[in-house]
Length: 119
Image (tube, rainbow, N blue to C red; front, side):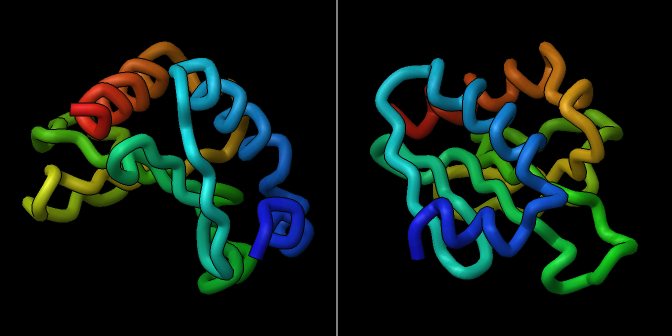
């Protein structure tokens, strides 16, 4: 599946995804892989995933979830869920409802995940 196909099924998530993608692509070389359930952003390893939970949970779900792999468990209360540890770190899930939520803290988390994926 390509990126356009994935996003066509999730128009309500499009503006959020576009802003998130813009932030991620500024970091440096990034490969995007779209599947039926998510878009993965990778360097040497996957460091971030974007997915539309509405496909599983219906209208009650956030329009978009950002998942980032950090080498530590971050204690910020904004995280919806933290899974791990697994090889490579802890998978942190953040629900996004509007582009203003992609703030400086979120950008810092994404940059840290990207740096860890490059090492």
